[in-house]
Length: 184
Picture 1 (tube, rainbow, N blue to C red):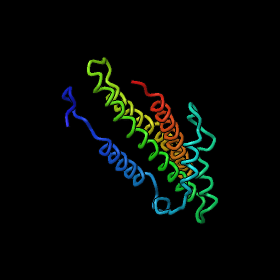
Picture 2 (cartoon, rainbow, N blue to C red):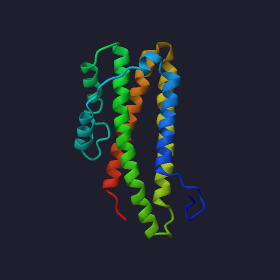
Picture 3 (cartoon, helix red, strand yellow):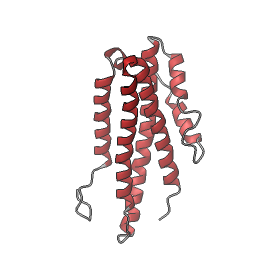
Picture 4 (cartoon, rainbow, N blue to C red):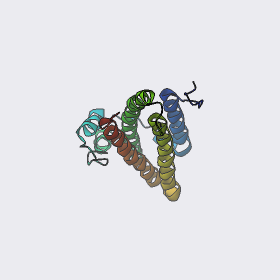
């Protein structure tokens, strides 16, 4: 599909599919088989409550990571594998919340853009560019943490995963705040 300026538009579903494939490849590359195979149970309601209760402007709430901590207590097995799997699971819930915010925000901005075709800076395209660069920056920053500590693989993996969690929490809440303050 082409936008009114002839540029190729990429759907949110396509971007989500790309993110899932990228995350899967990252996991296959960096996560050893015992960690990747670890199955855990996480109370997603803890994450959803944290998201709902975080006040405006609080992009690093104390409750972020609480579901992973509870998950580590509730699951049996190798502590390193459990910790990595719990943090990864919570990060996935926050990534889903982030994707939902983005998926609701983009059409709202595109609707405003359609009402104001002569604006200097299209809001929807700006959000899309921001999202692309944010994901690249998050992934690069967190992979750097892994690369710097890879001689101690479990510690490096945990640091990288906690990095992804913290940055995804911040982005989800930031988009929520921006979307809430949306004015045409």
